[in-house]
Image 1 (cartoon, rainbow, N blue to C red):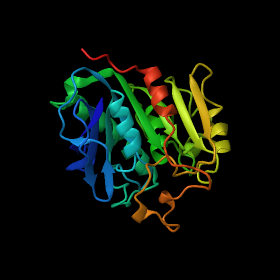
Image 2: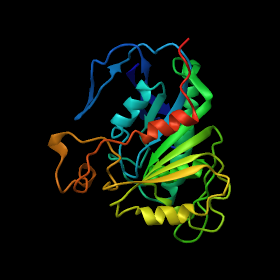
Image 3: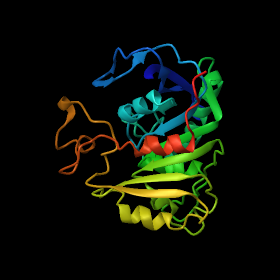
Image 4: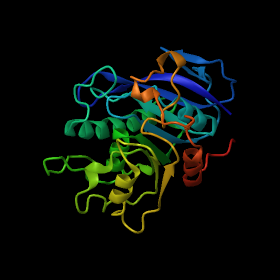
Length: 283
């Protein structure tokens, strides 16, 4: 199986207009390569969708980040039999950071991620191929915070008030990569979570240190199946796809890793998701 690639515009329920997303999906067509700006994908633009019905995964980027930065993971999942959608968060992305890292951004992020699922399930091409019973979310950093909120967590503001979010029960599993868990330190903040979680932390991450993630997630309900994996030598940005050589420089932290770390996302993510929702067999 290979990866198809399609640009998608998703209706914005908050600000009007539409926000961009990339969809990668299983195809039988060998990759021709796709280029967007300085980035390349091992995929084929607008390739025919492989026959079958597939689980759906949404990947949510970090605060002020980009939906273009998870190419390796999205391509790997598409080749493994997943529909994968990477949306850009309105007003909280590399081009518009007007709401980045605010309480409003978290509320809005959850709404936009749910709207992304709505759009994929209603899409004339992808909707019939998506299995609505098998939907997962992967979130990095602030995106991991949003994923935890959509899973049923109640985030709290720095001023001690709950941030309004709406759980989305369509998500049945979540992978949190270097998640911003500080929003969930209030008592009972994680009491309503019931879906399985895989949490990946970078051993040398100074922004979301493993010990802080582990401390917060100790309050998960005992029945919640979860695994916290500390990736040796990884930093906060080590979960992104490698940047082109022209963009790698010391004053651009997302392109940098701690010494001795090779930035290739561990396949433990794909293995966990495949265990939770095995890809549908081809007809």
